[in-house]
Image (tube, rainbow, N blue to C red; front, side, top):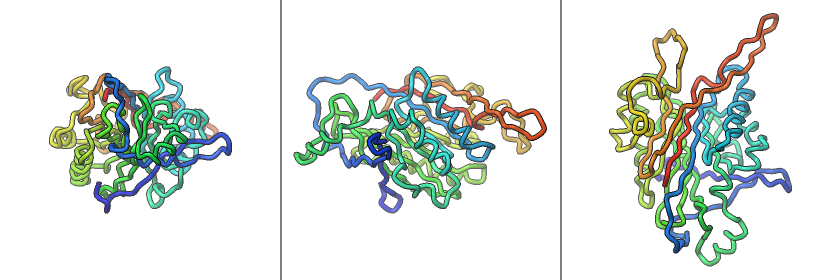
Length: 323
């Protein structure tokens, strides 16, 4: 990645002994991972991506309800991408007992990513699927190798500054399969620029993101989150950049079955329901995908009956894929 655009971040794990989040010092590259000699079948992972809607009433309560819904599913995802995370919502996420117990989290080390912007994105990775034994890791670092059975090894975590009207960044995490240690797959959490006048920014952003999946040592991966795809030209950007739209390949591109924003809402600006949220893949196989309808939350009104609003103005997406 271009150094001028790159801000190195880390993943953190919650330590019950001192009740603090501690950065996990993983600076692995594909060449440092020892190959496993047994043949490997493709590994399957599940991803949920959700825009939390930073600006509606009760943002912390809504985010908590959305996240608990994701975590309470019988098939808890291995990877969670969140967009429009405010500083207060970040604090709530880091205090969630289920998150503390089962996930590694980006941006727990400090609030740098939340300075000067109304919100940022965060990524959560299952500690069961991606964690390394830190003591084992340290002992093997001295020998110049890292080994961890079937678990994917975690590589660099980065924020990539994008050309943007709104200060948007892409949040990238590399994962390295033990069966093919000379390469990595990249998981990129995005929130592209909003509204119609920023289409030129989104065009450039997609070119940069597609290039990140083709860098030397990277065999592809996925880009997921809020693409703000509000026009036919937006929907053409994936094909233009050689990326596969997971929803289209699994469900086709006709109709609004995959709409994630503006569903059942009449707007004064003329925008209608659309598939603003997407998952784009390269070098991995999309298996199953569905739209997640947000729960409702009560918004009390003094002297009146309470309103009930969706926890987000975006529907979420759940994807299973194989590497």
